[in-house]
Image (cartoon, rainbow over all chains, first blue to last red; front, top):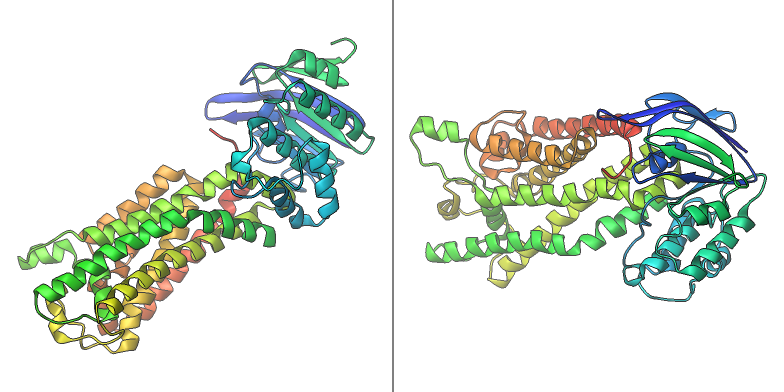
Length: 216
Length: 270
C-alpha cells in the first residue's frame, strides 16, 4: 500500500492552499498531520480522498493516478471535519445504510464496530439527539467499519473525553497493518505525538517538516 | 446507485415533508380563492380542471397587453409556486454533497452516479410537490361540491379566457403535463447551474426566467409554458409537441452540463 503525492499544488480563488507538496505514505504506519487552522491539513486529506482536484502535480495510489485512472481511491474511509449522518436514523441504521452500498460487511460487523467505538448498537436514539462525542464516535465507526486500505481522520478526537481519546488511540493502533495507511490530522500536539509513527507539519500550505515520532 | 437513491428518497423527500406541505398550502390558498370567487360571481361550483386552470393561469405577456391597451396584473401566486419550488430544489443537493454525500461518494466512487441520483431526486421531488398541490386542489374542489372534469364557458369570468373549447385530454395537457414537465426541466437546469456556479446564481437565474416570462413571450423563457394563459395557444396552434420536446431537450442538456461540471467540482465547505 503506497500513496505518492508529487508536486501537488492547489489554488482556490487567488489563494494557494497547497504548495508543492511532496510526500510518500506507506502501509503499516500512522501518519500525523500537524498545523494551525487553515494550514492545509484538511485540504490535503480532501485531495487524497478525491474530493478536490489538484491544480498541479498528482496523487498516485498503488500506481493509479487519482483523477485520471480513478475518481476516488479504491478503498478509503474518511472522517473530514464534522461527521454528517441522517438525523432521524439511529447510529446503527445510519451505518447500515452506508454498508448496504458496497455490501462488504454485514449486520454483525456493523454492531461490532459500533461497540468498538464505545456506542451501543441497540440504542434507538436518533442521531440528531447524540452528544458531540457520540457523533464523533459514530463518524469514526463509519470511516473504519469496512476496514479500508486508507483511513483519513480529520480531528478524530474532537469532543471526546479522556477515555474516548484512549479508546480511539487503541482502535487505530489495532488497525495498523501493512495493507493500510492511516492519516490523522489533529491540533492536539501531545496526542498526535502519542498516536503517530511519523508527523508531517504543514504551514500555510507547505510541508515544513517530516519527523518520525521519536524525533518529534 | 441503489444506496444513493435510498438516501435521496429519504433525506431529500421524506425529510422535506414540511416544505412539501407548505408548497401544497399555496395550492390550498389559490384553490380556495377560486371556489370563493366562483361563488361571488354566481357561476356555481367549479370543477377540478377549472380550479387548476385558475391556479396555473398566469398571465398573457405584459408587452402584448400593453400594446393592446389591456390591463396587466402580475401572476403573483404562479410566481410564488415557481419560486418556492426553486427554493426547495436549491436547498438540498449542494448541501448533501458537502456533508452526507461525502460518505456516498467515497463508497460509490463515482461522481456521475451521485449526479444521476440527484437528477432522479429532482424529478421525484418536483413530481411529489406538484402531486401534493394537485391533491389539495382536488380535495378543495370535491369538498365544495365540484366535479373533476369539465370546462364551462361561464368559468371564463375567473380568468378572462374561455377554455370550454378544449376537451379533457387537452385540458390535462394544460393543467398537468405542461406545468409538470416545465417545472421538472427548470429544476434540473437549476441543479446544473448550481454546480456550475453556486446556489444563489442558480436561484437568481430561475427567478429571472420566471419574471422575464411574465413580461415577454419567447421559446427560451421556458417557465411561462406552465401558464394556462400561454399553453392554451400552444394547443390551438398545435405546437404543444414542440414545447414538450423543448423541455426534454433542456433536461438532457442540463444533465450533460451537470455531469461534466460535477467531475471537476471541488468538494469543500467554503
